[in-house]
Amino acid sequence: MLFYSLDIIGTFAFAISGFLTALNKRLDPFGLFIVAFVTALGGGTLRDILIGRTPVGWMIDLNYVYIVIAGVFFAVLFRRKLNYLRTSLFLFDTVGLGVFTIIGVEKGIDANLHPIISIALGTMSASFGGVIRDILCNEIPVIFRKEIYATACIAGGAFFFILKETPLNDDWIYVITTGIVILIRLLAVRYQLKLPLIQS
Amino acid sequence: MLFYSLDIIGTFAFAISGFLTALNKRLDPFGLFIVAFVTALGGGTLRDILIGRTPVGWMIDLNYVYIVIAGVFFAVLFRRKLNYLRTSLFLFDTVGLGVFTIIGVEKGIDANLHPIISIALGTMSASFGGVIRDILCNEIPVIFRKEIYATACIAGGAFFFILKETPLNDDWIYVITTGIVILIRLLAVRYQLKLPLIQS
Amino acid sequence: MLFYSLDIIGTFAFAISGFLTALNKRLDPFGLFIVAFVTALGGGTLRDILIGRTPVGWMIDLNYVYIVIAGVFFAVLFRRKLNYLRTSLFLFDTVGLGVFTIIGVEKGIDANLHPIISIALGTMSASFGGVIRDILCNEIPVIFRKEIYATACIAGGAFFFILKETPLNDDWIYVITTGIVILIRLLAVRYQLKLPLIQS
Image (cartoon, rainbow over all chains, first blue to last red; front, side, top):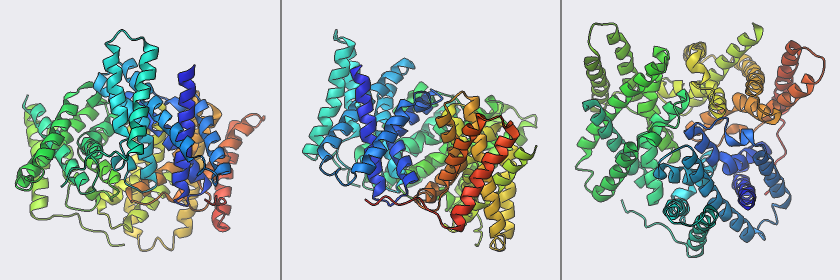
């Protein structure tokens, strides 16, 4: 169904984003692949480990692995043209952010976890692949410093539970909450919205 | 009971310590919260993952999450006065170190693990939140370099098993071994005791 | 049996390699031990966590812990002579790489995972201890940048499944595929073979 294909688009875009980050660090092809892989699948892997859903997702459903491989091949071939695709890639990445969030929230509900924990799981699924990517590349995670990112996931996850209380059917809730994450993120990048810094 | 409330004090203090470390790195509020969170709960989370106790502790008992949130709010409000509270915070942190160690040792015993492994679990519960904090902040973990820290946990854990062989009742064993960790750590900081460096 | 003792040799060599890396970072003895430990056992630990084989290996079979301790003691005592032993240590390390790979592949098969995932598990078992070591030491993982390393594991793992289709008996498959990993790695270091860099 549609939601699943959005998941694929997100994985693809995350893999490319990981690849490009790693490329700047002069890693070899193996390193590039690993960084692309953890960027795309690291968040969901961490989520699965924390809730004890093992073997973790991509070990059971190899499609995720193939998509990462496809993303890396795509990035290798078109790495010099990716600049022209920047807007598309950013959009894909943003779609991924939204879809991963809601999928993560769902896994939390499936595991009978509290809404707060489910929102945390959704946020982690969507944004912690990038955290692991930055750790591997020896940087302080960018999502801890730059434009609103994980906060968009938290907002989308919170709306998910609010809308659950309404008569809206599930499909609509998915579309709307995914849309909220995407919208907040787009606005954040467009207007360079950051969380207010707390002065030490 | 008393021991549980000490656990709360420790979590609170660890969260504040994480927050303060992150503040120096100019992270945004989300980053500050995540670093506070992993400092307070990362050690226990790693312990739970390694022994397969999933969903991990804080996903089941949300009180830990609320305490971290409270700790972060406290730190935001009083961040300019925390210098005056340094001694209290250090004491709380040290109490946390002792309590977390013994709780971790217990979890190992519950899982039928060997005393050596249980001591390792206790040490990890108490000190590896700080390791993850330092990794996120892009530093070599401070507990690998500075005053005696994890070594105090190991000593407390070892005494736990020694005292188990005596007729002392469990409550006393808890108090004494937690006290040993605290005492060693206090002495270490007071007299700047470090493990002897091995010259390369 | 023989294979198991090779496993011991590999663990021993990996622990020493971790110790030596940490020594250059001026860590205290506790830090040195932890880095040696994760270098030797971190890859297998990650593998066990991902497939849900908990408590993880070294918590059940303490021999691994003892070997790491032995390796660290050995390294402390002979650290100034290790230069003379460099070739032996490198050989041990390479044997470890081969053996860990095939053991990891096996665990994947035991868990009914797809060959591709099993090869990934083998590669992780053998090479991700070094990744965690480098993260703790605040460096970009060396296996993402230098001579062919993980790629040797992937090749050995792939041959494992190819040979499974032949009438060769299992013992021979073990010996041959472990040998392939070792040979590729030896050639890679001897001739400084790197994966071709992808220019950005």
